[in-house]
Length: 136
Image 1 (tube, rainbow, N blue to C red):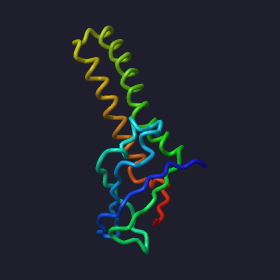
Image 2: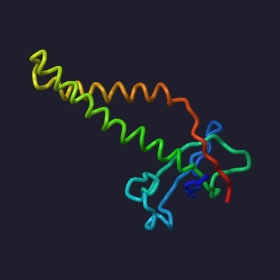
Image 3: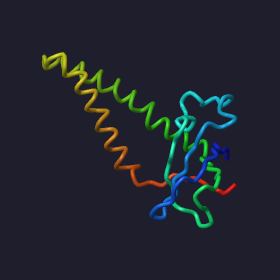
Image 4: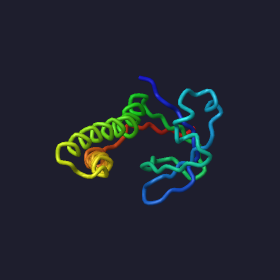
């Protein structure tokens, strides 16, 4: 299995959660995902379950499986666009059949995407992502 690796610093520990700040990585400029990877922003802080032996100020490596990154991109970026298009086509057909206002088609498309994200949150909202964290 291939993993994406990111190095960060623990900036806060609170309620059995550790907050890790990720900054620009040395290899980011050569990474093929640099334009779409939110982790390359100047200052990103994410929280994780606290791991014993890790304290504020420690440098840690976070490993995320490649297939998890790809699945997340598919669910959050690609599928919503496909759903938007499908609902636009269906909305256009319904508009012609029932002589609805032109505003129905974009409203129906937006409705489809909103329902998709609500269902996505219900299905994946509490699911844990398989992430490995180790102290450097």
